[in-house]
Image (cartoon, rainbow, N blue to C red; front, side, top):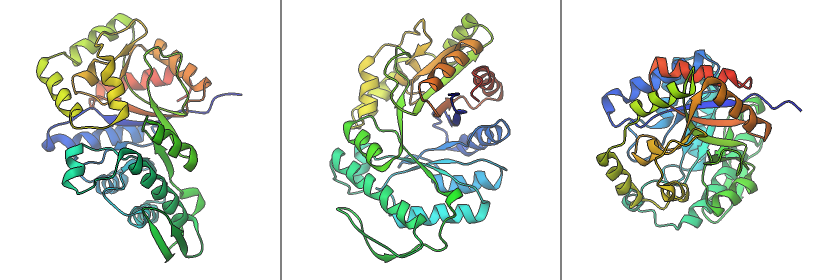
Length: 326
């Protein structure tokens, strides 16, 4: 059976400047809209400069086909509110969206918000959130729901969302609790790019960045010029690691190896707080072949860290095209 076409959602590399944040997002979103990407990933958190739902509306109004992947954390809103946003965007633009269901944010932010749930309980809440939201979006009748964290009595969302505009839900957590909720709710399970590339692929979704050039050595030289190692950026990561209970972050951090491996796996952008994922570095053909192999093993969905630069995005497109899956 021929693997399905890869759905790719670009995400901009870390931007610490609120003055350029919106401009970078729009530049990537419009590039994605014109180059067959599914949409763009929009982050959520206390430190995100623009609320992702507001950014999604801004992007959809300025594009023709983009379906944003919006991060949703139950700590910030009720399932009915999220369902209402989904319904509103569907009515305004006639497009489906994707939802990246998360529980994580800095521990200090959770404390500031007065949320004292354990890591495991936050995932129980997340599962209930997805279930209630799905019912609200799809049910022709008022919804009754009795959960540990959410209750609903004859709650109805109007108008009911057309089936073709139902959102797809992704879960990016790597803990046992996250894996369990993804399975129970039927969400698309995400994972980080594994260091060996060939083993440990057990999810339909993957998160990584691409840095590509015509030739392998050219790509490696350019990547090292773009992402430089320095002690200040490493200290920033150390600070964030002391303020998180994220399993996936701790798993990546435990590797601590900034070497660019022969297979193209590179953790330096993460270790220097310049990206939230590993990078895959190589020639267009090398990366295309790896993506094709991933797709043959069941990969369908990619969260793709990208440098918000036109030339770099063109290089990424060439690597994606070389896979024959994009």
